[in-house]
Image (cartoon, rainbow, N blue to C red):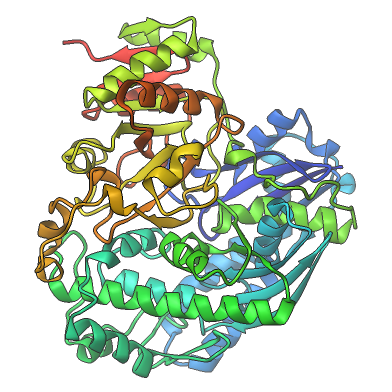
Length: 603
């Protein structure tokens, strides 16, 4: 049975194909169109998935959309009615888009599929999953767990913003849900906006900024108290009530009532790309702490509701790896699995899986760990002819290796000499993280490397942290970790033996004083709070990347490298060799690896 899953029209459109419950291919549309978080119908993603599975549209047993647009439209109308006349301008702007695109979703899906190839309309089975069910399915059915509590947390789907479900075999039961406008994701996005970042795009920047706040500051304590007293009421079960006097996302195109936020906190909204002041840092820390409290209470309640010792998570808030790491430390659950494409893109495979198991009642044939995401290596690959095309067109300096082992030894040597390497191999990753196939690699031991990468390679904010990739068998030598972490979805503390003692006045330092203060022998991957977002690399999941890390360890004695996504600020991760080569030429990267080809820049 072949099923195509689609997510589209809101943000981060994607497509995925499953065959007999196995994910064959999954990819985000942004990787083809080069529009970050592209929300349009995923034409190119579907085309790739069909090609990868060697199928036509007529070969599909079903096409499944990841949510129900009529329920979402119902929520839109009821919300505008409830807040009328406040949202009249937003109403007149959004309704035409709904009438022309979103409400006639069946017509638009058929039209989109027809643009890819002709098909028999009578033969097409078109299904619709609910938004949070798609999230839940994307995590549970790929987790390898026979049963699990499932927690989905995001901005909003149709009506639901948070759900607690129980997964058992091939079924998912929704036990509880929190409804719009009360949303953990929208609360976090409100502060994303308030602190000068883009909503539905830059929430991870807010998470990265939070550790620069001063946890001992009276101002930070006051901010936390103001949030919990005035903005959000948190119940013991993790459900929340948001005071809509301070928010405007329900009826306008803005997240918050800026004047009321500024009056409450005594801090003006930060303008994008302006300097970070101490109150901005403390506010970021405050909302992160409040969000973590909510997530922990939800997890405990999910345990009480289901009695399961396994937890699955999905939805945009599940990408908050700081909260995830702290949740794991609490040992509420024996095992935790988070869908690596936890945002809306993950709704595509989730929709397909929900139809396969729940609608078609197909059993899960294998629920033995590890998970079924195949390391998230589910996207397009390339061949030698693609590389040769670049060589013939640009005549670059390069060396071809016939043995991957020799290539790894040479790249390890270059990394040990503090060169920055673009590393492009095999199938592209699905989800927001580069996991060793579309990565930029560098030494984690060079204390200047974070600055170099942010300013000269990525062209992004200097405070942004970088993640380490480490051999799975060596991870506990560097980090307080006791299990594999293949998807960069958890933060772990750096080992005491790798730390450098901080000065007594550390918490009172400014952002960049903290950033450049020596704190670790792996300075460039150690965040200012002594944590790191760890990726463990195994030979089974990614043998090429594993071999490189082994070669680097043999040469340097260290099996940790910086692994950051192969892109620059505000661009999607590169997909194909020509995009990798262009990025290589336009940045201060020193070398580029495409397959077994090593490129350098002409002097």
